[in-house]
Image 1 (spheres, helix red, strand yellow):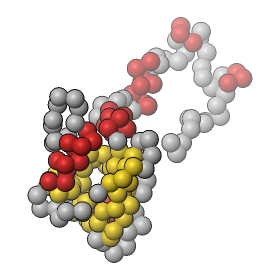
Image 2 (cartoon, rainbow, N blue to C red):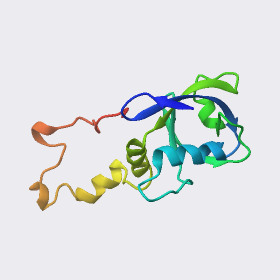
Image 3 (cartoon, rainbow, N blue to C red):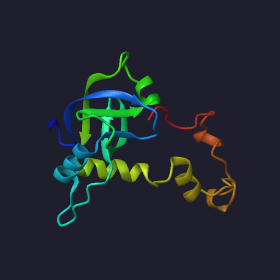
Length: 153
């Protein structure tokens, strides 16, 4: 179903079809098989962990579901609408994150603070206070001119 692609992903071809659910799913039997082969840790044989796949530019978690046909990934309708798929079900290349890449992606998705939360944690609410010697970020040679940082990341 999947073959070696890069250091972080396997490549497969699955039928992509829209679903009404909130989460993506593949056949439960295939989900368990892939989990056993790719994600099972030494001595730990959980087969219910979510897989991490990528369709075009979007990563998403995938669970097992008995109602999904083999070699098919059922994804939320919003995801299908955001792709170039115009007449689903459609046979598409789908990337499956390898175990280490999946761990990175899942850790980011499950609880890492957003950039605003991280900034709030480390930057005082009062930039004019003692930590900044009474100055402001918009004073002097470091005037940002309304620029709030990089976008599109």
